[in-house]
Image (tube, rainbow, N blue to C red; front, side, top):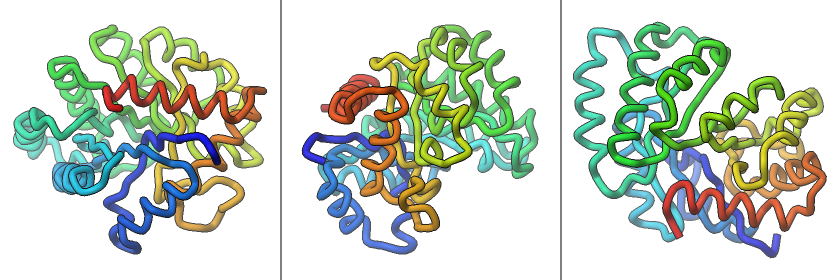
Length: 259
């Protein structure tokens, strides 16, 4: 593509298991991806995200604990204390990813909820956007966010619900981000949802190494595949790809306060 793209959610630390991060970034840049948010799932990956961001121009880092990684309830207070201490590092531009995941049973729901609430408070305190994960938990997540109110800005990453929840999420002030699953043949409800999101509140991501877009299905996802998702999003919204690319790039830069 001849216009810049911002991968608003990728796990470059996972790329290190298979590939050189530098090579991964270079392949993506060749496809027009100029900015990357390297998203943490735990404190160790947050430090690695920050290191990658310091080594590569255009890469930014988040810090947070994924709901599948919060562990046992007894361990949570110490873990969250460490998170609060480390999150004050100016290397980080966002808090997360956090949220709820009831699809897997890696962590008890109440422990996930406790962690989510602390992440929300931390994001508000530090004036950083929050990155939200939700899987099989939207009915629990929404009331928590609504009770919390408009204290924090952020993004519902890899939106995977239908159109019925978009209005409530937008009312909370959240951005909505779409990933490769938007392009799957059975994702019509997801494409319907994308058409309800205003252009100034939409983001695009890979969630690499997961959810490769349909054109690359079966392969390990990476940021260089982002144009496929962008094109699908533009087609779904009935807009030119360049216009959607420009909007998603501008939105991500503004949300994460980067240039």
